[in-house]
Image 1 (cartoon, one colour):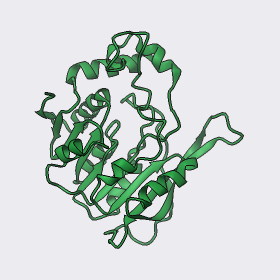
Image 2: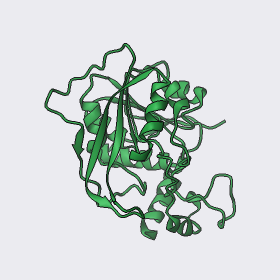
Image 3: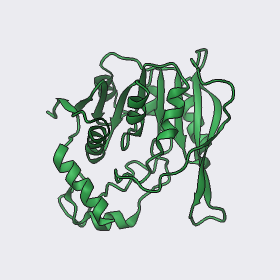
Image 4: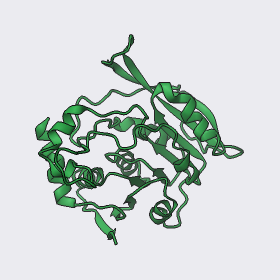
Length: 271
Protein backbone atom coordinates (compact mmCIF):
# COMPACT_ATOMS: atom_id res chain seq x y z
CA UNK A 1 0.00 0.00 0.00
CA UNK A 2 2.67 2.50 1.02
CA UNK A 3 4.62 1.79 -2.18
CA UNK A 4 1.61 2.84 -4.29
CA UNK A 5 1.04 5.94 -2.19
CA UNK A 6 4.69 6.97 -2.43
CA UNK A 7 4.48 6.56 -6.21
CA UNK A 8 1.54 8.99 -6.32
CA UNK A 9 3.55 11.43 -4.23
CA UNK A 10 6.52 11.18 -6.61
CA UNK A 11 4.24 11.57 -9.66
CA UNK A 12 2.62 14.71 -8.29
CA UNK A 13 5.98 16.20 -7.35
CA UNK A 14 7.16 15.55 -10.91
CA UNK A 15 4.25 17.24 -12.72
CA UNK A 16 2.97 19.57 -9.98
CA UNK A 17 -0.42 20.02 -11.64
CA UNK A 18 -2.38 22.89 -10.12
CA UNK A 19 -5.95 24.18 -10.15
CA UNK A 20 -6.91 26.23 -13.18
CA UNK A 21 -4.21 24.83 -15.46
CA UNK A 22 -4.96 23.58 -18.96
CA UNK A 23 -2.72 20.75 -20.16
CA UNK A 24 -2.25 19.57 -23.74
CA UNK A 25 -1.66 15.85 -24.20
CA UNK A 26 -1.18 15.48 -27.93
CA UNK A 27 -4.57 16.50 -29.36
CA UNK A 28 -6.30 16.09 -26.00
CA UNK A 29 -7.11 18.97 -23.61
CA UNK A 30 -7.64 18.67 -19.88
CA UNK A 31 -8.09 21.18 -17.08
CA UNK A 32 -7.75 20.92 -13.33
CA UNK A 33 -10.99 22.35 -12.02
CA UNK A 34 -14.67 21.98 -11.20
CA UNK A 35 -16.87 20.58 -13.98
CA UNK A 36 -19.91 22.37 -12.53
CA UNK A 37 -18.20 25.74 -13.06
CA UNK A 38 -19.18 27.22 -16.43
CA UNK A 39 -15.96 29.23 -16.75
CA UNK A 40 -13.88 26.07 -16.25
CA UNK A 41 -15.88 24.16 -18.85
CA UNK A 42 -15.65 26.98 -21.40
CA UNK A 43 -11.91 27.27 -20.84
CA UNK A 44 -11.19 23.62 -21.56
CA UNK A 45 -13.68 23.38 -24.46
CA UNK A 46 -11.99 26.26 -26.28
CA UNK A 47 -14.96 26.62 -28.63
CA UNK A 48 -15.43 22.88 -29.27
CA UNK A 49 -18.76 21.12 -28.63
CA UNK A 50 -18.14 17.37 -28.12
CA UNK A 51 -21.00 15.19 -29.37
CA UNK A 52 -20.31 12.38 -26.88
CA UNK A 53 -19.78 12.31 -23.12
CA UNK A 54 -18.39 9.21 -21.40
CA UNK A 55 -17.80 9.61 -17.70
CA UNK A 56 -17.46 7.90 -14.34
CA UNK A 57 -18.43 10.52 -11.72
CA UNK A 58 -18.32 10.10 -7.95
CA UNK A 59 -21.07 7.64 -7.06
CA UNK A 60 -22.47 9.21 -3.89
CA UNK A 61 -21.45 6.19 -1.82
CA UNK A 62 -18.92 8.10 0.31
CA UNK A 63 -16.06 5.86 -0.82
CA UNK A 64 -13.23 6.56 1.59
CA UNK A 65 -10.84 3.73 2.49
CA UNK A 66 -9.50 4.64 5.91
CA UNK A 67 -6.06 3.15 5.31
CA UNK A 68 -5.34 5.80 2.70
CA UNK A 69 -5.92 8.64 5.12
CA UNK A 70 -3.60 7.03 7.63
CA UNK A 71 -0.92 6.43 5.02
CA UNK A 72 -1.34 9.94 3.64
CA UNK A 73 0.01 11.41 6.86
CA UNK A 74 3.46 10.65 5.44
CA UNK A 75 2.60 11.74 1.90
CA UNK A 76 2.21 15.50 1.50
CA UNK A 77 0.81 15.30 -2.04
CA UNK A 78 -2.24 13.50 -0.63
CA UNK A 79 -3.10 16.10 2.01
CA UNK A 80 -6.17 18.27 1.65
CA UNK A 81 -5.20 21.37 -0.37
CA UNK A 82 -6.40 23.64 2.43
CA UNK A 83 -4.66 21.74 5.20
CA UNK A 84 -1.09 22.00 6.39
CA UNK A 85 -1.70 19.54 9.19
CA UNK A 86 -0.72 15.95 8.46
CA UNK A 87 -3.41 14.80 10.90
CA UNK A 88 -6.10 16.50 8.80
CA UNK A 89 -5.66 14.92 5.40
CA UNK A 90 -7.68 13.97 2.36
CA UNK A 91 -6.01 11.01 0.70
CA UNK A 92 -5.91 10.47 -3.03
CA UNK A 93 -7.79 7.24 -2.35
CA UNK A 94 -10.81 9.23 -1.25
CA UNK A 95 -13.16 10.21 -4.04
CA UNK A 96 -13.86 13.94 -3.75
CA UNK A 97 -17.56 14.93 -3.59
CA UNK A 98 -18.58 11.30 -3.15
CA UNK A 99 -21.55 12.26 -1.00
CA UNK A 100 -23.27 13.46 -4.19
CA UNK A 101 -24.98 11.36 -6.87
CA UNK A 102 -26.94 14.07 -8.71
CA UNK A 103 -24.56 15.83 -11.11
CA UNK A 104 -27.21 17.90 -12.91
CA UNK A 105 -25.02 20.99 -12.75
CA UNK A 106 -22.31 19.21 -14.73
CA UNK A 107 -24.72 17.76 -17.31
CA UNK A 108 -26.25 21.22 -17.81
CA UNK A 109 -22.90 22.46 -19.14
CA UNK A 110 -22.56 19.59 -21.65
CA UNK A 111 -23.94 20.74 -25.01
CA UNK A 112 -23.55 17.44 -26.87
CA UNK A 113 -26.21 14.83 -27.57
CA UNK A 114 -25.07 11.45 -26.21
CA UNK A 115 -24.08 10.55 -22.66
CA UNK A 116 -22.80 7.45 -20.90
CA UNK A 117 -22.72 7.87 -17.12
CA UNK A 118 -21.41 5.08 -14.88
CA UNK A 119 -23.05 4.93 -11.48
CA UNK A 120 -23.83 2.75 -8.47
CA UNK A 121 -26.84 0.52 -9.25
CA UNK A 122 -28.80 1.79 -6.24
CA UNK A 123 -28.60 5.37 -7.55
CA UNK A 124 -30.14 4.75 -10.98
CA UNK A 125 -33.23 6.90 -10.18
CA UNK A 126 -31.09 9.88 -9.15
CA UNK A 127 -28.74 9.55 -12.11
CA UNK A 128 -31.49 9.06 -14.70
CA UNK A 129 -33.54 11.96 -13.29
CA UNK A 130 -30.49 14.24 -13.38
CA UNK A 131 -30.12 13.49 -17.09
CA UNK A 132 -33.83 13.70 -17.86
CA UNK A 133 -34.15 17.17 -16.36
CA UNK A 134 -31.33 18.25 -18.68
CA UNK A 135 -33.33 17.21 -21.76
CA UNK A 136 -31.93 13.69 -22.15
CA UNK A 137 -33.93 10.50 -22.68
CA UNK A 138 -32.65 7.27 -21.15
CA UNK A 139 -32.14 4.77 -23.97
CA UNK A 140 -30.65 1.87 -21.98
CA UNK A 141 -29.30 0.83 -18.64
CA UNK A 142 -25.96 -0.82 -19.34
CA UNK A 143 -24.81 -3.46 -16.87
CA UNK A 144 -21.07 -3.83 -16.40
CA UNK A 145 -20.49 -7.43 -15.32
CA UNK A 146 -17.26 -7.40 -13.34
CA UNK A 147 -16.74 -11.19 -13.62
CA UNK A 148 -16.31 -11.41 -9.84
CA UNK A 149 -17.90 -9.67 -6.90
CA UNK A 150 -16.55 -7.21 -4.39
CA UNK A 151 -17.01 -8.01 -0.72
CA UNK A 152 -19.33 -5.66 1.12
CA UNK A 153 -21.54 -5.49 4.19
CA UNK A 154 -24.80 -6.32 2.43
CA UNK A 155 -26.53 -9.68 2.19
CA UNK A 156 -25.48 -9.90 -1.46
CA UNK A 157 -22.09 -8.83 -2.79
CA UNK A 158 -22.10 -6.53 -5.81
CA UNK A 159 -20.84 -8.16 -9.00
CA UNK A 160 -21.87 -5.39 -11.36
CA UNK A 161 -22.16 -1.65 -11.82
CA UNK A 162 -24.52 0.34 -14.00
CA UNK A 163 -24.15 2.86 -16.79
CA UNK A 164 -26.96 5.11 -18.02
CA UNK A 165 -27.00 5.53 -21.80
CA UNK A 166 -28.89 8.69 -22.72
CA UNK A 167 -29.57 10.67 -25.89
CA UNK A 168 -30.80 14.24 -26.01
CA UNK A 169 -34.50 14.59 -26.80
CA UNK A 170 -35.11 14.88 -30.53
CA UNK A 171 -31.47 14.20 -31.46
CA UNK A 172 -29.75 11.27 -33.17
CA UNK A 173 -27.28 8.98 -31.41
CA UNK A 174 -24.86 8.50 -34.33
CA UNK A 175 -24.64 4.87 -33.23
CA UNK A 176 -22.21 2.79 -35.32
CA UNK A 177 -21.81 -0.21 -33.04
CA UNK A 178 -23.73 -2.84 -34.98
CA UNK A 179 -26.84 -4.82 -34.01
CA UNK A 180 -25.34 -7.70 -32.02
CA UNK A 181 -24.52 -5.90 -28.78
CA UNK A 182 -26.47 -6.36 -25.57
CA UNK A 183 -26.86 -4.21 -22.47
CA UNK A 184 -24.59 -6.56 -20.49
CA UNK A 185 -20.91 -5.73 -20.89
CA UNK A 186 -18.44 -8.31 -19.64
CA UNK A 187 -15.34 -6.30 -18.75
CA UNK A 188 -12.96 -7.98 -16.35
CA UNK A 189 -12.16 -5.82 -13.37
CA UNK A 190 -8.55 -4.73 -12.91
CA UNK A 191 -6.55 -6.98 -10.62
CA UNK A 192 -4.21 -4.08 -9.97
CA UNK A 193 -3.49 -0.66 -11.39
CA UNK A 194 -0.48 1.59 -11.34
CA UNK A 195 -2.33 4.88 -10.96
CA UNK A 196 -3.41 4.69 -7.32
CA UNK A 197 -6.98 5.61 -8.27
CA UNK A 198 -9.30 3.65 -6.01
CA UNK A 199 -12.21 3.29 -8.47
CA UNK A 200 -10.45 3.09 -11.84
CA UNK A 201 -12.50 1.41 -14.58
CA UNK A 202 -11.10 -1.18 -17.01
CA UNK A 203 -10.14 0.43 -20.31
CA UNK A 204 -12.80 -1.55 -22.17
CA UNK A 205 -15.54 0.19 -20.15
CA UNK A 206 -14.57 3.42 -21.89
CA UNK A 207 -13.47 1.99 -25.23
CA UNK A 208 -16.84 0.42 -25.98
CA UNK A 209 -19.11 3.48 -25.78
CA UNK A 210 -16.56 5.61 -27.65
CA UNK A 211 -16.17 2.96 -30.35
CA UNK A 212 -19.95 2.71 -30.75
CA UNK A 213 -20.54 6.35 -31.74
CA UNK A 214 -19.33 8.61 -34.52
CA UNK A 215 -17.84 11.48 -32.52
CA UNK A 216 -14.49 13.16 -33.08
CA UNK A 217 -14.48 14.76 -29.63
CA UNK A 218 -15.29 12.99 -26.36
CA UNK A 219 -15.98 14.83 -23.10
CA UNK A 220 -15.27 13.50 -19.62
CA UNK A 221 -16.07 15.96 -16.81
CA UNK A 222 -14.80 13.53 -14.14
CA UNK A 223 -11.58 12.28 -15.71
CA UNK A 224 -10.14 10.52 -12.64
CA UNK A 225 -6.98 8.67 -13.62
CA UNK A 226 -7.53 9.35 -17.33
CA UNK A 227 -9.01 6.10 -18.62
CA UNK A 228 -11.35 7.90 -21.04
CA UNK A 229 -8.40 9.87 -22.42
CA UNK A 230 -6.35 6.70 -22.98
CA UNK A 231 -9.34 5.10 -24.72
CA UNK A 232 -9.63 8.14 -26.99
CA UNK A 233 -5.92 7.91 -27.77
CA UNK A 234 -6.32 4.27 -28.83
CA UNK A 235 -9.34 5.03 -31.02
CA UNK A 236 -7.90 8.18 -32.60
CA UNK A 237 -10.50 10.41 -30.95
CA UNK A 238 -9.86 13.64 -29.05
CA UNK A 239 -10.61 13.81 -25.33
CA UNK A 240 -11.63 17.00 -23.55
CA UNK A 241 -11.55 16.36 -19.82
CA UNK A 242 -11.85 17.92 -16.39
CA UNK A 243 -10.46 16.61 -13.10
CA UNK A 244 -10.93 18.35 -9.77
CA UNK A 245 -8.05 16.75 -7.88
CA UNK A 246 -4.56 18.08 -8.81
CA UNK A 247 -2.97 14.80 -7.70
CA UNK A 248 -5.08 12.86 -10.19
CA UNK A 249 -4.23 15.36 -12.93
CA UNK A 250 -0.56 14.58 -12.32
CA UNK A 251 -1.42 10.88 -12.52
CA UNK A 252 -3.15 11.46 -15.88
CA UNK A 253 -0.10 13.28 -17.25
CA UNK A 254 2.24 10.49 -16.18
CA UNK A 255 -0.08 7.80 -17.52
CA UNK A 256 -0.28 9.50 -20.91
CA UNK A 257 3.50 9.92 -21.05
CA UNK A 258 4.15 6.28 -20.15
CA UNK A 259 1.49 5.05 -22.61
CA UNK A 260 2.43 7.15 -25.64
CA UNK A 261 5.98 8.34 -25.02
CA UNK A 262 4.77 11.91 -25.66
CA UNK A 263 5.28 14.67 -23.09
CA UNK A 264 2.24 16.73 -22.03
CA UNK A 265 2.64 20.51 -22.02
CA UNK A 266 1.12 23.13 -19.76
CA UNK A 267 -0.93 25.68 -21.73
CA UNK A 268 -1.85 28.01 -18.88
CA UNK A 269 -0.89 28.38 -15.23
CA UNK A 270 -2.85 29.35 -12.14
CA UNK A 271 -3.14 33.07 -11.60
